[in-house]
Length: 380
Ligand code: SF4
Image (cartoon, rainbow, N blue to C red; front, side, top):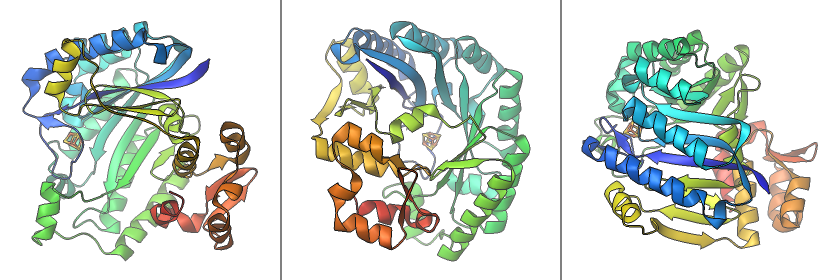
């Protein structure tokens, strides 16, 4: 019996498309939402009886997007309640809903609390109005604060804020202002992402045409230092490269993902991983609706990873966590340790103090955190 499986539900709709966004999200297709939620409900009930989901207890549900709170409040709450009723969940599951400041009404928040949602993630991104304009966000900094206070009034005591740094025109000083404004709200959790400029997005075009320019590397390093200083002083622990939490508020759903355990992916473009089998759903919401409604499985790809590929993936994902990965756990799951598997490459990374072993855990050193992607790429 696997007692630690997660469920990810994807809602691929947004009010408008942000300039940097390369996620599977669509603006101007709100007319599709009702049919999409019907399809999701059908997918949930077919998977609840599926052999892949037998012998599993589910410990977390994460509704991400897109913007899940774009859905009508009762419809979203019914979806959550339906999912909780369809699958066997542990006694205190973590249930997260992602949201944006301009899509959080009092009714939505109350409906979400009443159907059992325990955790809210709000995409604030910045407390600098200039940043929000550059990113193409359609909410103000006041909307973000108002959404946070509304969530508290609705009873949410586990709220995460998403913020972004390394933005065009941003300085360490303006990032400090964003962080201080966010800390003043006293949330339980932060996800702090450095901007990755994705090819094909409007923002990438603006940078290529030199209408915008990214901050210098030194400035971004300074932003990372400001982050560590302010968050540590406020009592937050960095538990993953981009995630910080107050004690006991780390996101269990995402830890399950970084430990490369099992989760079921439902919805357009969602990817699941069940005991090493990767299942990807078709990305286009209209095709997803059509497939599910006509009783056809909505998968676009399925891949069974061999033991070695799964081991490498587990090492790379696990090293994103600050505490790293248990070597004993790796040996028990896969039958070999990082040192025996990677041999000289691992020795070199340990000698250069990019990787460290502390109390049976292999982890990135402090000096390796800013260059984590380069280090991890050597273990692929
Ligand atoms: S709100 Fe999020 S998912 Fe929607 S367009 Fe903006 S970045 Fe993309």
